[in-house]
Length: 208
Image 1: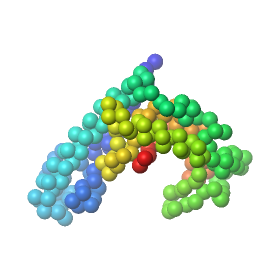
Image 2 (image 1 turned 135 degrees about the horizontal axis):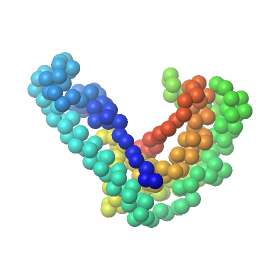
Image 3 (image 1 turned 120 degrees about the vertical axis):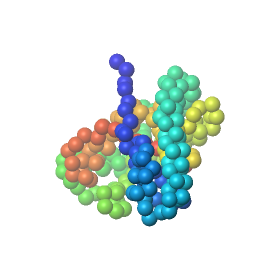
């Protein structure tokens, strides 16, 4: 049975960054409506911004088409991986001991907890250690090798990232599916106090 993927329509309608305005805007195919929603700017400025968005729309379309191309090449072993050990999740070899302890304590308590491994940067934004140094070093080497391949299309996470790589493109979808379902689900349930199931992810690096 083949796997089918879908793209939310918001990908083509929202979060367009206009550099000249230093502002994120929504897109509408009707220019008059777009100008009305951004009436703090002059009409000529809106026309330039509208052209910027149209160019970004084309880039996003190419991005989606590129996703299938690069992942097909990865699946067909077109890219030779340097270290196979980082592509199948192994908690003992990949996780920082503090993360293993965090997950263990959350599962034992089965409730919202306040743990020393977790720091809250602002409301609903948390940081905590996950992977150990050895895994991170191997992943950086793999990413640098992948990025150096000029014959492989690179799907950058967004327009502000010139070096970032989506880790699904690298062939790590199964790795992060297991990480999300078996570990991150428990942590998020405790930190955000919810029982819903995480059903998707977007893992990326910002630099190499």
